[in-house]
Image (tube, rainbow, N blue to C red; front, top):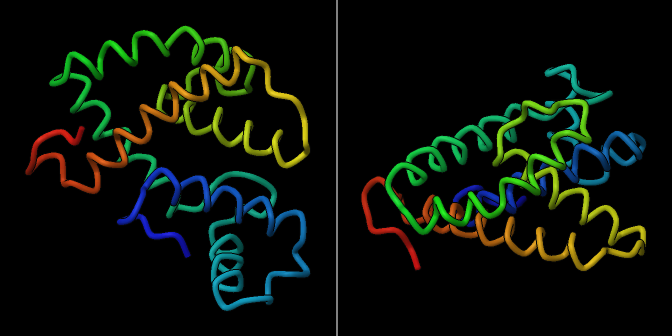
Length: 156
């Protein structure tokens, strides 16, 4: 399984992908011990039809907390978010959850693009640009998380 300690953004996206996989192919839930365990968690948490595992939700909350801290302390990060916000607001307006956080919207964007690519669908240059900016933000947050942001300098 992907490790939250290695790259928290990849960990969250991985969990979302596994959730969707288990919903689409419940017969494969016993294929590996990891899938079995995650499927059992989905049963216990009542998210077989939709929603996210507490593991993913808690990790997302940690990233959002870090985002809020860095947003207050780092002008370059704040500027990057200001540039990204209009695209995130557009995305949020097209969902059934227009009040989701900017960080969750970054994850939703990247996940949706990943799904489009798996389906061999075209990604517009505008979407690719927003993807790159969202990836930069989540990469920055993942590095900061890994470095223990509260105890160290912001990673380059």
